[in-house]
Image 1 (cartoon, one colour):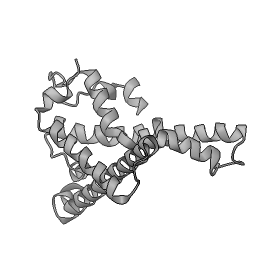
Image 2 (cartoon, helix red, strand yellow; image 1 turned 180 degrees about the vertical axis):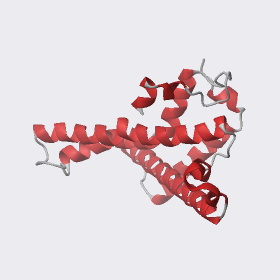
Image 3 (cartoon, one colour; image 1 turned 90 degrees about the horizontal axis):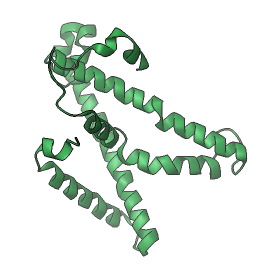
Image 4 (cartoon, rainbow, N blue to C red; image 1 turned 60 degrees about the horizontal axis):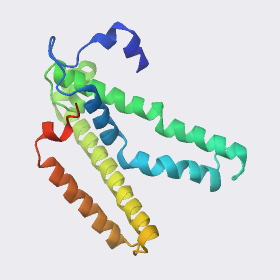
Length: 193
């Protein structure tokens, strides 16, 4: 990823030549943080180092000074530059083919230069279906973690019950708020100039 910053590849626009970006840089950063990591970073950013320190240290005994250092090292590895690089590469490839070459925003479209016309047939559709399934599973897992986290926090603060039904209620409440936000025009929701 960093090679894009320091080579001529970093000068390639993701849109047509001469086009200006639709969103400002702060808006893009806000969208990256909200879409890229979401509740995973909020939950596991705190839970993972505590777990590595107190429950199961990856390298040494739990509860030691070295366990604290190892816990933070593993957490930075899981949630730091490495994770962002994976998201960034996929996003750049999709954006390049979508905005520069007017291809559909599909994984199969990004693989067309490698596999040719086979991406236009059943093989391409299979890859797109697998990508959608993987995305749905990832989003569902994230929303599930978020609902359980909200349920646990409310239980701790207000002595509310923790149950599947309570977590389910939080999930649907979050979904309702999401739907309300997305009902507004995109530009008005997202542009932080």
